[in-house]
Image 1: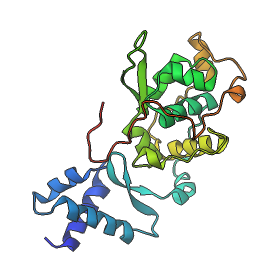
Image 2 (image 1 turned 120 degrees about the horizontal axis):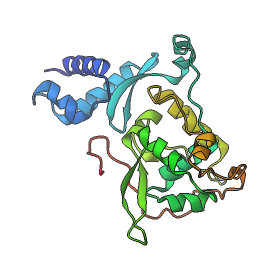
Image 3 (image 1 turned 90 degrees about the vertical axis):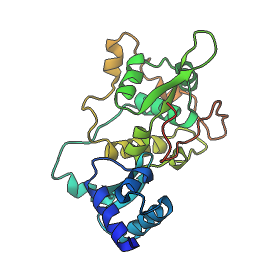
Image 4 (image 1 turned 180 degrees about the vertical axis):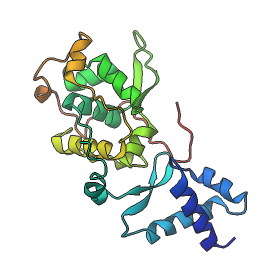
Length: 240
């Protein structure tokens, strides 16, 4: 099979697939007639062929997929005028701490934010598929260690943690949180409608102190990251 025919097959499979596909899965299309290196080369060529169109071929954590470009969103939103999901600052800060410092315990997060983190907030992030427990720290009480998932990276449109917005001298600045929120709103349209809120936290009897977020310590780029997790390769199975 020549590369032109291979690209046509790959293009068709990726357009029709309901989720991202790995190179290993794409190899099944050719029954051994086309190797992984050739497939990767064809994928890069497809990316170039689709450059400048409203749809792009991207590599995310779980594989390759076609998706609309961000600049097309204002037009596509007219077909579905629902407002994008909005997240509380407590939710975004907690999710960002896990993303940048993973694996971390709830106690680690509370030390960084300077406030108590509600268990319901963590449960809602787990339900969305953005975080998961990957183990327990060998210390008193064996607290759970949290890390982000491939779904989190997929919803941000990223292939690895290295592509997260860079931290500036102010740590988790409003700009970083806004980039994360925008990416999640772009990629997680199928997420549940109800968002984690301070009212929900109060319902569980463990609400964070009102107005405590601005006083939370900043997470800076120079701060050491104990137990730093390595970003998963798109073609490797999840470590969990």
